[in-house]
Image (tube, rainbow, N blue to C red; front, side):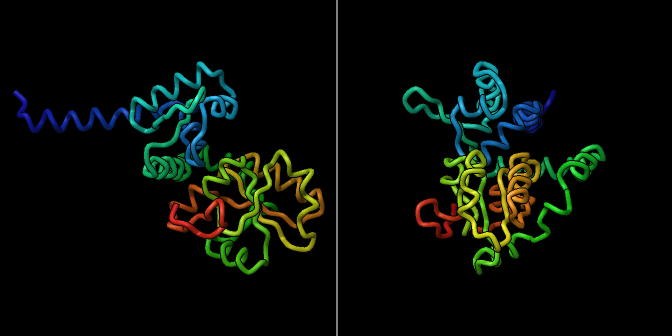
Length: 230
């Protein structure tokens, strides 16, 4: 007969397994990645993941049951967010694990996400220093609500959908560093290509807000633009 302490040990493993089960779906991983940028409504998540509302709600039900995601209702909308910053850290660790252990992942990244001409080689400290000194212009291409939830210090907000019409607001002779939702973000790649076609010296950052926070660096306050502890 198992001792009570053995049963409790097994119970811990069973409860932890819920996290693995919840994260075993590519769609749910994408939802976690999107929520690492800030809270989103079910409608927004459905549109951003290319799913129906019913399918998105079903995935969110699993994530909520596991404790990874929490939700609140405001009027007719249900807003979801990650339960804690530790969920973002798990997502980043899983991504890093894939890059380190899976040759297929490294091959895709090399072939599609690491163009040396458009990918900035600066580390986070160098980006912060260059942006503070005005040697580069830092552009956040995400949605307005994501920018408001927290952005890199000194970053201007130009949503990718408005980049073509607002590009002329940027000084022509200052290099541009653009970022969106991290190293696999296609929007950041497309935005950088558009800027370069527009005559700007533009590169894409291989990181975004979740990576910045994980490095212990402060985000900027949405209202004042000053660093905060968010």
